[in-house]
Length: 152
Image (cartoon, rainbow, N blue to C red; front, top):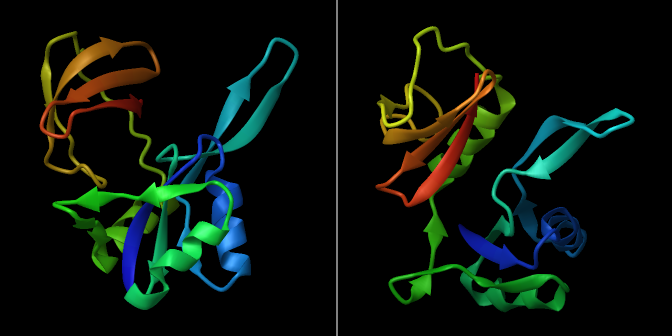
């Protein structure tokens, strides 16, 4: 059995993963819990790490069974084939999310500085700092084409 990436409708990741689990398909929706601030309260909210994406572990003959669940849009393809995610990558993602990697960065970082990520799933990737605040750094990973927000 292989892990495959599935694209879902927006804000349906956890629902789709739960429905797939209920029909006997192993699904993984990586989530993180953050504290959101509203004008009248603070609340802990669980949000997906990868918006509109989940992972399923399924055999090749059963791949089309995921489409019986509403909210599933399509498989993610790479070079004309459904993208297969290695087990080690899923394990690394689970391990990273299980640990608290919030570290205070001591040096004064400025816009345009280059930074190499020291740990986590993006370890070794080089990025350019886009913005910095007292608690967050936005880092552009050009090699992957993404904007990453790191909390200090």
